[in-house]
Image 1 (tube, rainbow, N blue to C red):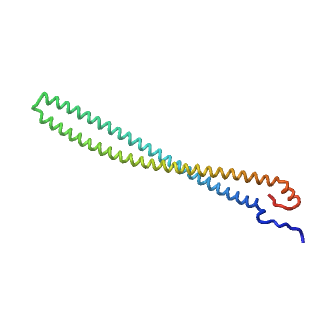
Image 2: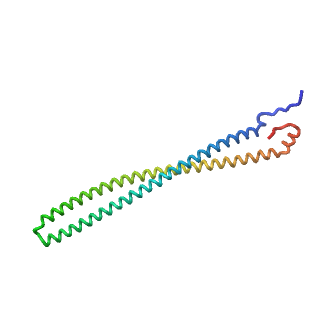
Image 3: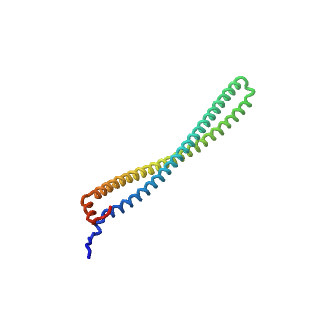
Length: 190
């Protein structure tokens, strides 16, 4: 009967490490794929944020333009009221016509004022809703960024561990005892 060597299962430490390294490499590839997906989602959220800000700026410009028209209308009403007052001073016989004109302008002014107040209330509500959406988007972006940072650090730790295991494997391969065992015909092939 020829010589044979009993090698317990614990002696296959290098094989077990290689299997573990393969598993880690697969997990690293999955993590990188997930990270790329998160980055794409983050980019989409940033794009939505920019579009929302542009829309908000447009609505703000529109509100300022509306306010400018409203002030112009008020100034015109004041001018007409001043003109009416001058004309009333010079001719009392035309008072009823001017009073009617003032009443019409006053009614028009009230209608425009009510419209401006309603528009301002709608804009304020719309801006508040958009601000809340923006805040929610920022919170989601922060959470996604924190996850990306956490996963990146994890992947870097895995890379460092992998390099350490590779260095150990290289040291084992260069071991005098392993080389001696190979010469004798005993020991694993690495």
